[in-house]
Structure formats: C-alpha cells, structure tokens
Length: 414
Image (cartoon, rainbow, N blue to C red; front, side, top):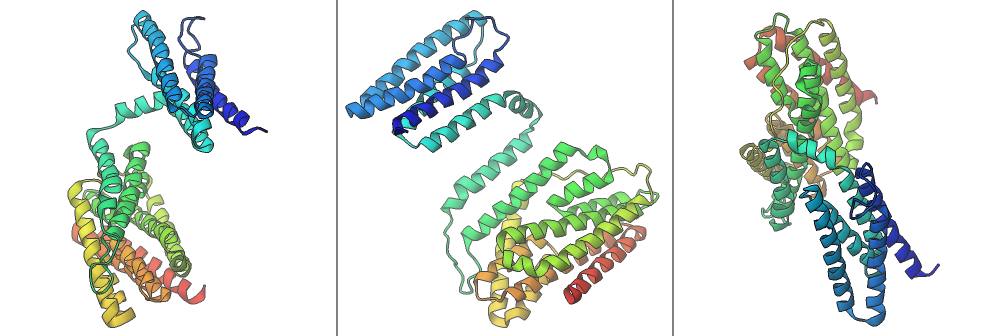
C-alpha cells in the first residue's frame, strides 16, 4: 500500500478517535448546535495530513504554516460563536481541534507512530475529564507540593548532578545516590496514595500494611504508642508483624529491579521470613476481633527535610560502606550494613547493591542485605520496647525470632 495513503489513513483515524470522544461528551446536544463532532474532527485530522503532503510536494513549509493558521482562525471563530450562545468559557475543544490538525500533519511530515500514540493519548486525556476534575477536588496542597517536589527531583535536580564517583573508594556518586533517592521517594509516594485510596477507617490491618509501604519502622512506633492505651496489645503486635512482612517484600522488589543476581541469593530466606511474619501476625490479630482503633495514617513522604536527611544518610552510608569494603572486604560490608540498617534499611540495602559494580562478590552483597534485614528488625524491636508496653514488644520479639529462625533454616535447606 502507498505510504502516503497509510499516513492519511492514520491522520483520519486520529481525528475520528478524538471526534468520537468529543461527540460522546456532547451526545445530548441538539443537531447542528455544536461546532465540531466526530465528522469535523475526522476531517481536521485528514486536512492536516493533506496540507502537510502539499507542503512536501511543493517543498514550501509556509504552505503548512498558512494552512494551520487558517484552520485555527476558522475553527476558533465558529467555537467563539458557540461559546457566546451557550455562555461557555471552555477552550478545550479548540485546543483539541488544533492538536488533531497538527497530529494529522505529523503523520505525513514526521513520525507516524509518534502521531498515532499522541492521538490515542489525547483522546484518553479528553475522556478522563470527570476523573481528573474529581481528583483536583480531593487533592490537598501538601499532596500537590509533594508531586511537584518529585517532578523537580527527577526532571531538574537529577540531570544536573555529575555521574561519577567523587571519593577514592568509589562509593559516592551523586547521580546514582539521587536516582535511588528518587526511586525510594516514588515508592513512598505510592504507599501514601494507597493509604488515601483505601483509607485508615477500614481497620488496623489495612492501615499497618499500607503504612509499611512508606516505613515499617514508623508504623511499628505508631502501633507501640497506640498499644499503651489498648486493653489487649497483642493485635497491635500482630499488625507490626504484618508491617515487617511488607518491609521485607518491599526490599525484595527493589532488589529484583536493581540487582536480579542478588535477588536470586536472598529471595528464599527473605520470602520465608516474610511468610513467618505474615502467619504470626495474622494469628495474633485474629485472636481479638473487636474494634481496636487505628494507628496514625502514614504522613506525606515528601516533606523536604526528611527527604534530604535520607539522601545525606544514603550518601554517608554509601561512602562508608565502600571504604570499609575496600579496607576489610566482605567483613567491612557486613558491619556497615548492620549499623546503617538499624536506622534505615532502604539506605543500607541500596548502598550494598551499588557495590555489586565495584568488584564485591554477589554473595557478599547478598549476605549484607540479609544482615541489613536482621538489623532493621532488631532496631524496630528496640523502638517497640522503648515506646510500647511489655505485652506489645514481647510478642513482637517472639514473632521476629520466629521469622529470623525460619529465614536461617531457608538458607540451610533451600
């Protein structure tokens, strides 16, 4: 089939797709009361392709420019008359019409696949009007600010950072450190969205599981404080055990994405330990079924100060881990992972994973990750003992020991 025929066909299809959406939105309007419907948008896409083809044949780009400006003027004039009649101030249809014309031209004068993808995206965006407006009504300023911070972190700060190590041990690479910080921030934001979608009102388990996506340590501390006023703290300890399960699964997911070779070494003991936490936690929560109250919902993960603290801690841990690994090889890596994971398991695990590229054996990195998980569990227990009653932290200690023992057995027999 002739190439130009295909290009014009796609241009027409883009217009028909967008016109279908616009026509459906205005399906209850009387006939001949609207500037553009499915036929007009289809013709607009085809017209863009035809004008672009003429510009190429005549080797005169002003033809395309003049065609676009003429179409824009006519389309906008008719839409202005409609808007005055309906007392409507929306310019969406005008912008959509101009975009359809431009995409039709792109089908001929540019990349056909990009134009088709953009046309589908345009139709989807137009169709999501009610959902997007509803989202804006529910969106708070703190959440909007968090999304903007994530966008700046990714699109502004990251490209400006040097992608090379700045220390003699090869541990401090600003670009890599910030990239992994963005990754953890994105995971935290996803956890926050989960809390917003599900809601904490559904109970202790849902709140603990969703909050643990952001920080199992924070959830454990919140549960410990809530357990002080509870008649039966055991279900709170069970919820903390379920949060620990989520923490392990989150770490496994990060490792699977960033270092599959390490994941193959730690997946068996990690999943067995997570299963032990799940069984113990479910049993503890099931013992008492009355309404228990709920821990505090996970706070917004994009407060600037905690985010910068994480980045600085990650940079420090990465540098120290590389230095210790350089001086003391595998033993140094284990020590640094254990110390840092007591405060933040994410920084410790990510620092260990980065050493795979610095001549550290994969087996040593896997051991460091397992050590980080154990140290983080001990750190949570210390917080539980400090902030909660004995009837909270003692059962949690038993569940933690059970999970550690199950994971150890998995390393020996699996």
